[in-house]
Length: 101
Image (tube, rainbow, N blue to C red; front, side, top):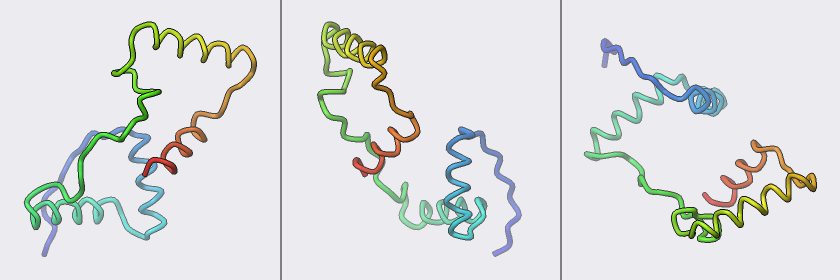
């Protein structure tokens, strides 16, 4: 089928970059990936994957904490910074993704 429609999107540049890196490894241009996504939506009548919130441990879920518990976590964090107990945020997020998929 001929492609004749243009789709203009605004997306988070970091998300786009990470997606392009993955698609590049797959040898697939972004337009093909989006076309596949749209075809799947049309075929199944909805988003082709579960859309849900990640399961967050209660120990770090601020929505379930009291104000005092949040302040305690913040104080612990500041104490760790002062002690030099810090990590690269990119590495930390990658570890989180690896253990929560």
